[in-house]
Length: 630
Ligand code: GP9
Ligand code: MN
Image (cartoon, rainbow, N blue to C red):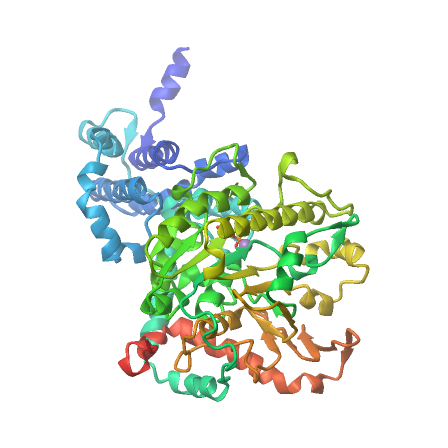
């Protein structure tokens, strides 16, 4: 016993270790008490627990290089900085339900929202966020016997940083198994904080910020001339018969989660998959050769394409990386034409950085999760069930209607999201039977969304909104990835070659214009073409816009769509993975057939990337002569 006592009294701990442990535990306690971070299993809880550690080891570990007095000073200062960053996030979170980002710090409108109420956001117990600083100070001042403050050798410093590196990699590796492509996809701040920790997240955010600032700083607008020439040379005259047929009408846009075109007019186990859409396309314009062009930004990329008629980026989500750019997006243009503009989506506002990006796109209002009653009963899978979502949205639409001006309302569905989970009571058709549970479950959830949209359209009729609105229904991106090719082949009854994979990237596009008869249009087109098409229907000229799409109704529209991976589709050919396929046979053909389009596909993606990386539209739309005409 005595020996044990002696052993412990001879063990001394370093003040750096004390500071690290205090900050570490404090951060974890803050995660659990001040943020609403959803944890689904013990592994996520473990990642959350260890995630502050690697940063703290590096940051406070620098103290090992100082002598005692300076070291104490360094530790006090860094502990204060870390505590302050944590506390700032906590206060910000109380108000915005989100974590701080650098662009947000510079967004004065956001900050003034916060500024006025900052004292209301503070609580007396907040002093506890700095409690560890008092402990550290006391330990340094009274130097109890178990605290040591010695100089460290090179070897011990090296060992320390090796351990720090190992912990950082361990954390990242674990996070990667939980969330593949966490850093390249950068989808949600909550996800980032949950996996790499709040401090590493800020470093990552700073890195993204400086990278895009540098590219932006180096651009001077001279690059625009070529791009403008290209766009003017490819401009397609609108279809005179249709230009302005929906002038002044509301625009109701429904983005259907993960809905691919192969389900339209098809059956599973002898049952129709989308009975409502199949009916609705007969009364609408339906585009059956329409491709999604999204990349890693998934739904947000599809939104980006539709709003801007620019391509998203080849890596990362442009909603995250370039939310501060100048855009001339659909909501902004419609605002200028007297519309009220809103997006409705029952998810966190920060998901895909929508809260920030929507401001850049010109949305006047974002009805996010907080505008809906979301509880365990009415939720499944990713959140609020689509039927509930649409039903609760009617009240918001009534608000818009009462404004006595046309509105643009974008609805983003959620139930048909991977892994396609559905409650038994919501299932109207049976699952498919293949070796892919994902594909099997896909059909009933697609059907559920089909029913949700049917109910919504009926409600629009009841509310007297149907006849005054252009209704657009579009699939955002694929739902079934190439990992399920075998099951897909079984369902479609044909082998999934790279050619078929490209054809599977078709998503439905349905445009219902009051008073117009139904028509199926086979022109090859993509999400990039939605903006000019809709603008023309609403009678808004886009001649001076910087856009890569064309009005699909235009008689001059070329059959052409480029996917974000560089594959492209023309009237007769599909080019993918360096092979040119003949659409008639689905077989490879002479590369020469695709040749004339190769340059165009490459050029468009390059020009679009240039615009985004250099934030080039700021040089264009700030010049009054290019303002979109009212
Ligand atoms: C989330 C929803 C789904 O808000 O848009 O995003 P996804 O994973 O499909 O990009
Ligand atoms: Mn999606």
